[in-house]
Structures are given as structure tokens and as C-alpha cells.
Image 1 (spheres, protein in one colour):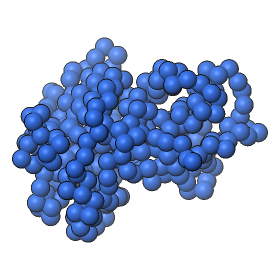
Image 2 (tube, helix red, strand yellow):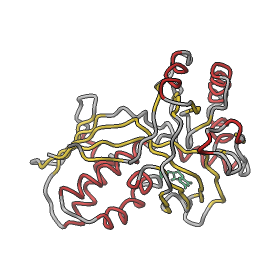
Image 3 (cartoon, helix red, strand yellow):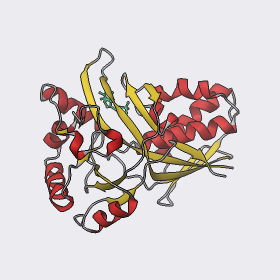
Length: 283
Ligand code: C5P
């Protein structure tokens, strides 16, 4: 049996370009793995199965992106060995934290180890699974472009931690991109250097262009953001298509103090550190 850990990501700003011919939007921004994770196991079995954290085996779960990732590696390896996957989820779903993509990337890595396939194979499968999977396979800190498939690792960031709050509703990413088109390609709120940790200064500030689109779909996001700005006395950003919101603190202790005064009712409210990888094998 192989165990693995899948780390969530945040977007340190996200600029969105026009709609491409393939139906995706070009994006540009720094993606960062964070220390909030799901756990997976992969083992040989009599039949394919996936057991999720609720303790309930979901037959249709074989459509789960993580299982499809493992099955794609198996197919490449030219074998038919049935697989049993378990997935213990902590990363909130449909939150803008890339949880499903992180699980898929970890499953690619685990299946790659199991079936002894090279990293190049995993990198070729990743974009077929989803736009954020190539980043999650690489992990750490990276400049991401294209529709998400262009991933250039950059030096690890440091000197700050995050206060992360996920409001109590889900948002579907395709709807946010569609709303962005309907709103005529809006720009997001600008967070200037003065509100950023030193490691993020000098690039002209951060902007998430999906913010107006996410708020158009779920106006409560703006209430949650304003409430956090008041409570924390600092800029609060949206991750990806949301609704996850975060702010920068000097370290995890300071972020934990901020979480103490976060509004009640969030799906998740946690102080998190940055993480240097997108997935890892359990030792
Ligand atoms: O690639 P993924 O399945 O995560 O994307 C979900 C949806 O989000 C896409 O079908 C598309 O509608 C939208 N999307 C986009 N441009 C991107 C990434 C996602 O329009 N770069």
C-alpha cells in the first residue's frame, strides 16, 4: 500500500485574460502550496473502489478526479490491476483552494510510484485532468500561465503565514469564469505593496480578477471580506474562484490570534503556513 498527502493551494493574485478558442481563459499569477492537506492511500484490490472520508464507499466515486488520475497512469503502464483508493478530505471542496486538483496530483504521484512510470508521463497526464493539476503536481511556489498548464517554479516565499477563512457555501469554478465573461472582463480589487508582506512587494501589488465575478454569483463573499478587513485591520484576498479568503500575517502565531476573532459559521477558519511541495508520499 502507498500513502500520500495532497496540499491545497492559494492564488497570490490571479490575472485573467480573454476566452481562448479551447473554451478556457488564459490566466497568470503566482500559485502557492499551503499546509492544509488531504490524505490518500492506494492499494491493489479485487475490484476498483474509492472510499471517501465519510466512511462511505461511493460507487460513482470512480469518476472522482483522483481515481481517474490513478487509472490514467495504470492505463499508460498497460496493466489492468484493480485499485482501491481511500481519500480522507480536509481541504474544503469548491472553495478556490484546488483540493480536487491536489488530490489528483497526489494520486498521479502515488500511481506513478506504484506502476514505476516516469515523471514526464505524469506531467503529460496532468493537464488533461484539470487546469490546476499541473501546478499541484509541481507544488511549492510557481508562476502559472496558459490555462494553468504552464508552470515555472520560483524561489520559495517566506516571512509570512496566512489566516484562511472559507465562508459556508461552495462556488463552481466554471460559473465564475462565465460570470467574468458576462461582466465584460472586469479587474479585481488592487492590493498595493504597503498591504503585502516584504516577499511579495515590488511587483505592482496583487489583484484577483475573478473577485467581481465571484461576488456577482455569491454576494455574501463581499460581506465576509469586509467583515474580515474590519476584524483584522488589513487587506483580505480571494483565492482563485473562491469563496476562500485569506490575509497575510507575520507568522502562524499571529495568524492564529486572528483566527480567534474570525466570524463564526465558516466552513474552515485556520492559521496556515506555506508548504514547499504540492504532494508527498507517506514515509
Ligand atoms: O480545468 P478545470 O476542469 O479545473 O476547469 C473548470 C472550468 O473552469 C473549465 O471548464 C472552464 O469553464 C473554467 N476555466 C477557464 N479557464 C481556466 C481554467 C478553468 O475558463 N484557465
